[in-house]
Length: 354
Image 1 (cartoon, helix red, strand yellow):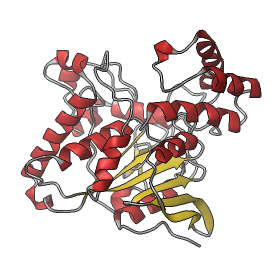
Image 2 (cartoon, rainbow, N blue to C red):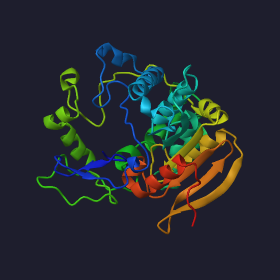
Image 3 (cartoon, helix red, strand yellow):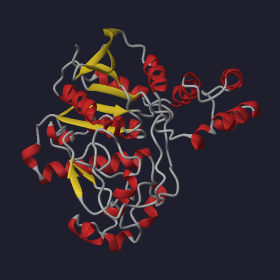
Image 4 (tube, one colour):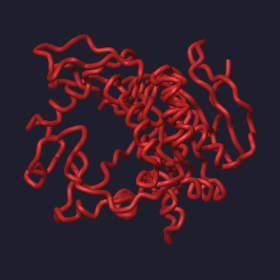
């Protein structure tokens, strides 16, 4: 409701308006809330939440998909893609890997797309601090000290005290700007408006999460969505606190991405270039670790006579694309560019040139 879905929520928190750049304009879209406990999803056994982790999430998602295709067999055999952002840099490749090795192979997996995604812990961290410096968020002395004292291939507990000190200093950025879009305005409201404001898809309202939260806590909406609120027994929020811990978290997804590519699965890795949380620098460092040859050189890609971003294509059908002017949640800030990007990927086309 804040990104790629067919509807956005008006500022009164009660009514909807259409998103003309919804991704279901170019594909059938199935939204899956995972792991259990996120959104309106739940487990009948609440102790399951303490067992949450990458492996459990993959198993549950695969079981869901297999059963969904059995329930709706008319979709079997159709081209199937998995997309996600942020920590879905783990969820998406792991689910694709599980589908690849599933004995029935009833899911016709063609590709995965991950945006501003966590895929390699060492380079994700290094790239984040380098992004802070190149975007004038931290001092020269701070980045020099980070490069001198920090070795991000080590666990956090193994870093020297000098690294901890300078990382704490650099991390003040998280409290100073919207780290998910360093140039975005902030929301200074804590709720909804008494009457709806004129909405704008092109200019993302920084208070959108307030409107969505109000809408999804409306009992009539929950009833219409068949949400099992008696089982949930909590207020819906954008960031749930239901899951107390995370049991397993591999430090890298690069070997899985390598395996997917070698099995003919297309991969799109895209970055909103205003994101400071998993920034474009992190992604470029991580992709360089794959050591793939460039198949189509770095160039701009265009939409409506403007540069929409930049792209490079590597061997084995891995495409990297930036989306100019987008934050962590790319379709929120640049919905038209996000739709053009994903449409091209689904169709197996290069992003449009001038």
